[in-house]
Length: 392
Length: 78
Image 1 (cartoon, helix red, strand yellow):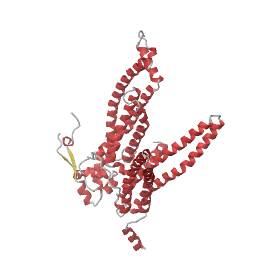
Image 2 (cartoon, chains in turn brown, orange):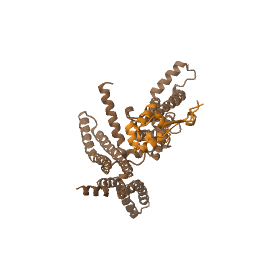
Image 3 (cartoon, chains in turn purple, red):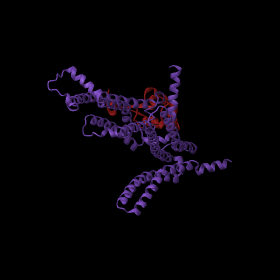
């Protein structure tokens, strides 16, 4: 192996060791989460593919393209979740695995390859044949009726060229090809993980990950610090992102103005882009903050944190109450709207106030939990404190 | 026809847990000595995984015994 290759291998092993040592993500390795990720991965990828076909054929789900972005996002979330859950085996460099881990991984990859090779190829051939015939039918007799000619010479060459034109022409054909490629690529990457995850979830061959283990409270505290710091950085990004986006917006406007475009529509567009991007980032960070609470909950299961009952309870309360309060705020919003249509202004005011209060609580929930975690990680167990005092 | 079950293949048993306990070693410590994951030791002790010949020798060496003392074979059909 060349020096560059050796360095790359060492870098991979170092990165792997760092990823595996972060036990705060191990909650993904639990039975329930693995079931959700495995089922989610399979269901979303199939739904994505079926919706793509349905859209192309103008079939039962003509409006299904509305969901493609959401499905793609869910597919990726399941894939990265599985990678994280099975990081110890699935994404490890070969040098970091022992013989049993290698056997498990190779077995999963071998089985996935066999399944994808047979089912995938058969599926692509059959669906291509059906879609090809349908495409020519739609292209020649439905979407272009004016070209219909009863005496037309439908030779094989003409049939093939029409199919190709139809695929390229409408954009729909290319879309289905792209969907097939996306689904196959996704399956190639995710299916071995799905097999490994399934085996772990049903308790076959692999052990479900248990409570995190730390030698000392200081080690546990350092792990919790990672979680809280990650949360603080994300929250800071929410505070800084608007400034950056506004600056970018001004810059984009300035550049476009000099290029003699319609500045008014551009300003509207850039402003919408700025606020759209900001809103999206805030939503992502908010959902990530739920992950932070889950990571903290997993760390609280450690024996080193057994004395932090209050912090553990507060985290659990926030984990349960935050989604409930969020859903409650939507219900209150509907009730407020209902009160307004019935001209009951007092009720409208009361429900509207509750909406804001609940939204505030839902947003503040993860922060409260993280503040509690930041305090808790400084609270040493009594034995350690006594030991330190007696040494002094 | 299909893959043979563990019973058909014959079971490789071992006295790993007894030797490890006698040597006053934890699973993690023994795993560290032979260069495998601690879970792998658990699987071998529960007879759920048959180690490779190389690992069998490493384990015997780490526990100060021989492979035929540590491992035994039950019920395999010729």
